[in-house]
Image (tube, rainbow, N blue to C red; front, side, top):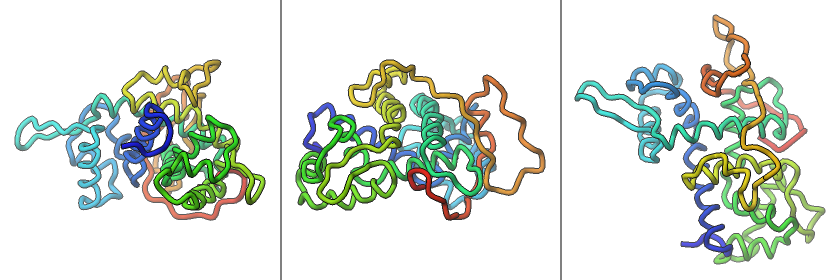
Length: 277
């Protein structure tokens, strides 16, 4: 069933990216996925890596990741069960540094440095808002669009005024700009900067190599390669570990950078200077 008035292939592309974001947006999902980096682990071993989650919270999330096809449960014997990434889950991990690169460049700065995982969690929360992907997609492809025209494209079966809550939220989040009431809408620099992220999510969700992201018909940037810029995971907001983490070295992978998954962080007031968190 179509979700927009866009051509079927574009509509399906938006739907797949929206679904991909829905898989990783729920709280702790990214942390569990990263805890599974490496060989398959027993339930107790994974739980030890996400010890801030009680079993009643952890088990449903692990099961949901299995149902989403990102994690595989393997029963070796009745007493020996392991969990590990599926091929599809492992293919999603290289998208995460792209999200961090975007967040470090475009999200407003926190009072304290944020870990890479927190950067991802803040970013996907913004992108997974209702109708956000479709609106950003249309603005990228058509540059400036009126609210009424956006409504006809993005939510053709609804009253056209229903588009404004979503638009106001995207403006407040810093992803969309407008010159005022009655004026057309356009992507902000931060919204336009999502090209590598959306291109990679589109390629991944369609089962294509991430190298195809640069050739995406809407978000592609043929003059650039698919690899993200180098980035470093900032320290977590949690109390410092007893042993300081080793400095990041050239050639380290996202698995190394995410090896110190952070627990729940307090809410902090964030100053202006980029899209809201």
